[in-house]
Image 1 (tube, rainbow, N blue to C red):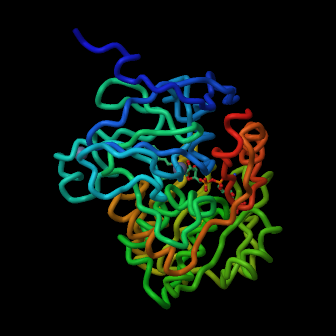
Image 2 (image 1 turned 90 degrees about the vertical axis):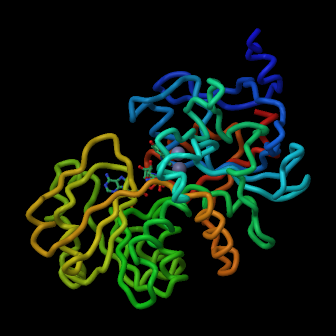
Length: 374
Ligand SMILES: NC(=O)C1=CN([C@@H]2O[C@H](COP(=O)(O)OP(=O)(O)OC[C@H]3O[C@@H](n4cnc5c(N)ncnc54)[C@H](OP(=O)(O)O)[C@@H]3O)[C@@H](O)[C@H]2O)C=CC1
Ligand SMILES: O=C/C=C/c1ccc(O)c(O)c1
Ligand SMILES: [Zn+2]
Ligand SMILES: [Zn+2]
């Protein structure tokens, strides 16, 4: 007889779940599997709050499988390992990012780019190979196959390091694969949020010139003085953006100075926009990489891309091998996210603030100290 859900997933774990498109999170109990031979059990201490969590719980991508327990920037301590586990021991500091399973046999998996596996199992809002739902890091503990667990190097803090597991790898990957990690090159970063601010930090660590292109003039000073950006262009204010006329609103002098100067741009904006004015910032044959996943389509002018032989591409998350490489690189360079730590009780308020762009630059939930009291 097939095992029941309770037999397959006997651990009862405290979590925060959204139940409908209001996205409001409430405490629930979920089931986790026992630690299998290849698994690592992790006590979750911190979990970053990514804008994808917000898109998902509010069903903006029309794919929510409620109840949704979000969270794919998970850090914590190993509490148990299965008998085949080679890379981890009890007590290790570890992280889990956006995926927890792949097929291991498709072309993408064989190339080591399992983030593009057609059968990828995401950390939450997905169905695992045994048919169970996956639940993310807004929870006490998680059980994950060791292949999807990242070793946290000494010196990489579990709180400020957590956002690197999604925001960090999502920006590091296109920089690596599109040659946007070379000293002296000029990169533009659209959107100074969770992804954008770590993109600025990685670009500076690679020795690049960085221009932030932002809708928030008030972010200029810290973008330049604290994050180390070389230039800052105000792209629009929110009202003008709603009218779709970002081009007219660009801060004209800085914009004109930046036109035709960028080897690449990464677009981390969570909202839809007209790409034309941004494409004009690229040098001939420059590349614009789309990372933000807005609910509504972007507007693109074919003419602006074709004239100048420019490329528009997309990129999603990153492989496990690249995630380990990125975390090790970040640790060597003392690179972490700028975070605001929030308790589990305040998570709904934090998500409201994230929706309004009122975070500098990533909320991280203090799961270890506060979830059980929520
Ligand atoms: N491709 C992938 O693998 C991944 C994609 N994502 C997606 O990336 C996006 C960003 O995520 P994250 O950094 O966590 O989000 P944040 O909310 O932290 O940052 C998004 C930034 O976008 C800018 N922005 C917001 N509204 C607008 C607007 N109307 N027009 C132009 N810019 C705007 C703001 O920057 P500013 O104030 O500077 O203008 C804001 O800070 C999301 O859509 C998310 O789902 C996330 C992770 C992985
Ligand atoms: O924040 C990360 C989002 C990752 C993601 C979104 C959508 C999708 O189909 C994925 O495979 C990953
Ligand atoms: Zn994410
Ligand atoms: Zn695969």
